[in-house]
Length: 138
Image (cartoon, rainbow, N blue to C red; front, side, top):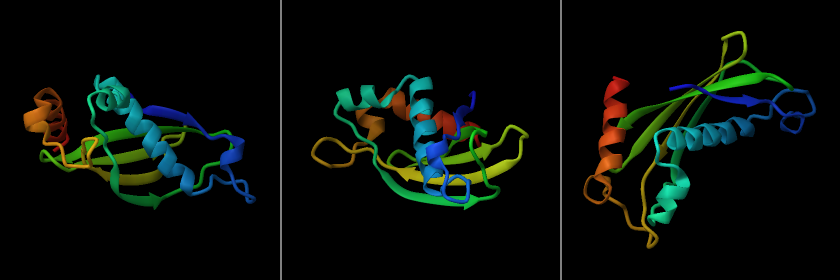
């Protein structure tokens, strides 16, 4: 899958001229939304069907600073999915191909009442797709 591309905005930098660390988590979310759109299960579609996918954990490793107006490519992979918990890994590289960030996020699927959604029963097509994507990354 094509990586998501983000150009560092001036407002995303701090007084030292480097990207503020919190922005990488924003880019993870942007890339994750792009990922779901590319697989045909955008957040709008999920929410129309009464499903949300909150973040339950985030891990960040900063490797090299980025600055305005660097272009950052964000690769997203399903690192694990066993039906309830969905884990993503993220690799961000600059235009020179140098790794600037590695991250992970963990999610679950909930209905409007806040109860866990078992995708294998309620959304088998999405369950199969996420399972196959996780298996292809092994």
